[in-house]
Image (cartoon, rainbow, N blue to C red; front, side):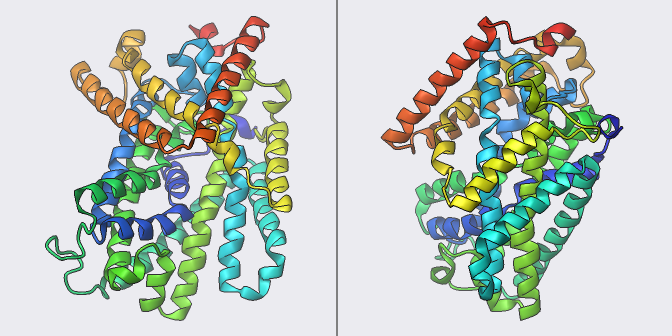
Length: 442
């Protein structure tokens, strides 16, 4: 049966990560970064991506030592106290509330190319979203095929932008001494690093596919490393082109399409917008729908959610979970009600849990001495503790910068959400609903 097969090798899993990482966000973030720090945005981007990677290095070490069937949920189940495992399980629903925005953004890009379709915006968004849900309903084999095709086309489109753009750079575009370099000073450069680091999100999703990945203790961490390398190179070159083909004042704060229009022939520009921007959204959407199911299925099996959410058909598809996700997404599209504010009420819990996971990761060599010794990415304990400390500092930094940016209503909302999460977790535990698989295996 489909759910017992291993669908993802290194190529497919890397494509899931790269496709999940390169979304429409980078098309907007690059221009904002250039506005903050000028042409040094390319260096701010690559530094930000590398720094962000340190937040999931603990995940890499853990996945190399222990197969985590439930992805990030299993990571929390192994490392955190039970009540925090429940809190983490509730934060897993956050992607439900963002799926619709990807479908809407895909429709936005398509209409920007074909303005005559503007009156069909809602229909287009609904159809595109439905198509990706349908692909996911057909199982992981179909998901992998769709992602492989979309990601390859996307990288070709971005490659056209990069190769032709590099041949149209202005003099001094790569010069450190040019007046357009670090226009905001050191403070501006560091601000750009913090902003552009958000583009580094995506490679950590490899952990979610553990149970359907061939040789996961090797393939999962390798996919993370490869995808970080790929997106670092692609992002750096995109930033170089975006900031180097036109005067800074013309591209600062602008999407990539502004620069692309200047040097791409019309057919290639259309291909770039479809294969680059729209397909980037498609790969992110496909990855989001595909990867959220595994942690929630495992959390459901442990008792944190009603059983219908984790029940799967012969293809390994959780019909109840997907029905809820699809209903929420379609409600957002058809009503035009944004759920972004609700997501903002969940941010604090997610950031705090990330920090706690890194802290509890220090116990890995002691908790699982044999698994750690035989880990695919085993390093001396001293090296592990040093790397984990760097990860902790980076995680604390990102948590601090993001949480301090919340206004008072959002901060209050986050506090209320965290309290409710703890209350729900305590209730499920006291009611005897929780029977964690990890405890049974231990």
